[in-house]
Image 1 (cartoon, rainbow, N blue to C red):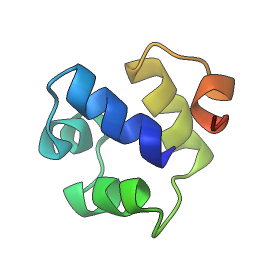
Image 2 (cartoon, rainbow, N blue to C red):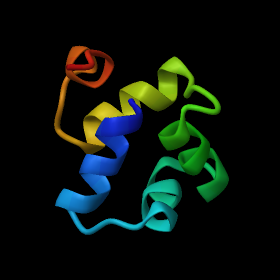
Image 3 (cartoon, rainbow, N blue to C red):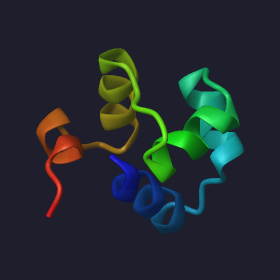
Image 4 (tube, rainbow, N blue to C red):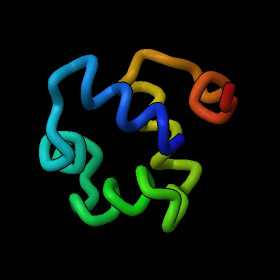
Length: 63
Protein backbone atom coordinates (compact mmCIF):
# COMPACT_ATOMS: atom_id res chain seq x y z
CA UNK A 1 0.00 0.00 0.00
CA UNK A 2 2.94 2.33 0.51
CA UNK A 3 3.38 3.20 -3.14
CA UNK A 4 -0.37 3.56 -3.71
CA UNK A 5 -0.62 6.09 -0.86
CA UNK A 6 2.08 8.27 -2.34
CA UNK A 7 0.64 7.99 -5.85
CA UNK A 8 -2.83 8.94 -4.61
CA UNK A 9 -1.45 11.93 -2.70
CA UNK A 10 0.48 13.18 -5.72
CA UNK A 11 -2.15 12.46 -8.40
CA UNK A 12 -4.97 14.06 -6.44
CA UNK A 13 -3.01 16.85 -4.74
CA UNK A 14 -4.09 15.53 -1.35
CA UNK A 15 -1.95 16.15 1.70
CA UNK A 16 -1.28 13.51 4.32
CA UNK A 17 -3.26 15.66 6.74
CA UNK A 18 -6.29 15.70 4.44
CA UNK A 19 -6.14 11.96 3.81
CA UNK A 20 -5.78 11.29 7.53
CA UNK A 21 -8.79 13.48 8.27
CA UNK A 22 -10.97 11.71 5.70
CA UNK A 23 -9.87 8.30 7.02
CA UNK A 24 -10.25 9.40 10.66
CA UNK A 25 -6.66 8.44 11.52
CA UNK A 26 -3.61 10.48 12.44
CA UNK A 27 -1.15 11.91 9.94
CA UNK A 28 1.51 9.85 11.68
CA UNK A 29 -0.38 6.67 10.79
CA UNK A 30 -0.45 7.67 7.10
CA UNK A 31 3.28 8.45 7.20
CA UNK A 32 4.03 5.07 8.81
CA UNK A 33 1.96 3.23 6.19
CA UNK A 34 3.76 5.05 3.39
CA UNK A 35 7.14 4.22 4.88
CA UNK A 36 6.20 0.61 5.55
CA UNK A 37 6.75 1.06 9.29
CA UNK A 38 3.26 -0.16 10.13
CA UNK A 39 0.32 -1.67 8.30
CA UNK A 40 -3.26 -0.48 8.11
CA UNK A 41 -6.15 -2.56 9.39
CA UNK A 42 -8.45 -4.27 6.91
CA UNK A 43 -11.05 -1.60 7.67
CA UNK A 44 -8.54 1.12 6.82
CA UNK A 45 -7.61 -0.69 3.60
CA UNK A 46 -11.25 -0.94 2.57
CA UNK A 47 -11.83 2.74 3.29
CA UNK A 48 -8.67 3.71 1.45
CA UNK A 49 -9.69 1.64 -1.57
CA UNK A 50 -13.06 3.40 -1.57
CA UNK A 51 -11.43 6.83 -1.36
CA UNK A 52 -9.11 5.97 -4.26
CA UNK A 53 -11.91 4.45 -6.33
CA UNK A 54 -10.02 1.17 -6.48
CA UNK A 55 -10.86 -2.32 -5.35
CA UNK A 56 -9.02 -3.99 -2.50
CA UNK A 57 -7.06 -6.22 -4.89
CA UNK A 58 -5.60 -3.17 -6.66
CA UNK A 59 -4.51 -1.75 -3.32
CA UNK A 60 -2.84 -4.95 -2.17
CA UNK A 61 -1.08 -5.96 -5.40
CA UNK A 62 2.35 -4.46 -5.88
CA UNK A 63 3.95 -4.36 -9.32
